[in-house]
Image 1: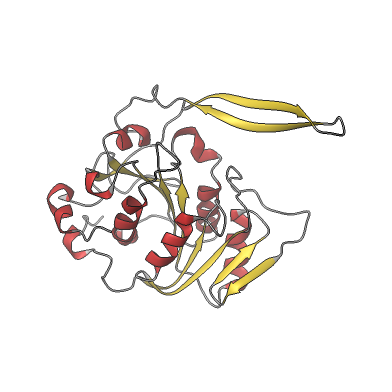
Image 2 (image 1 turned 60 degrees about the horizontal axis):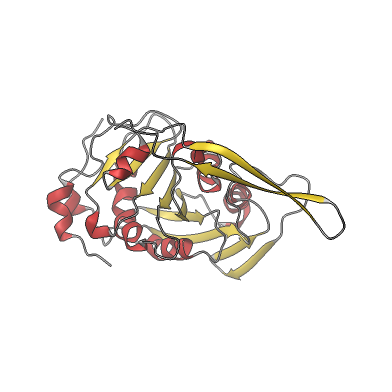
Length: 277
């Protein structure tokens, strides 16, 4: 297994990684994070195609639309909205929309972290899992926040390209599906990029809000009550982000390096040379 490459040689202006990359998300085609990812992807691939849900599909995991037809809206020759789930978008993109083999699927940049128990429900990661299942390397990208009106997008913008380049240099036994979470701090306050493990116990309760509509029929709103404080093990995704590290975990096989190992070596010294946005 090869050692990580030098950080300084892996900035966003390096040579293209591949010919075609497919982008999707679960926040919807008009989401801010996806727009940032579309701009970043041009440095990674010769051809960038965006196929994303027309509406917010958070929490839909790997669900597929099987009982109603899917509609596709072309916004231009490289951006398409789909009336379905993130997993639908990946399959329609891979099998029909993109004119040739896809080398990489990037899902995100999600508005909010996908860590702990949320990993199992995430549409962002569901799309990535489907892509990897069908033989395309996939990376889910999520930007954590503490206040929804103040999200440090510069964190994900600054480090996405170098992380993607590093992950594709790793030697994987099978097609990888990787979960990357950026902590809720500005890019200049990030202290590292580390391999981590998943965690459990962050969902304390399921909230079921039962209401009555004007025709006296019941309807429901579902939500989770999260409690991240009880996840304390140092090697977990949540604890890694508490240390202001970007948390990286492979979801469909073992990490290629031990938990806690830096994804990018000598990060503390080398990040001084990064072109922050």
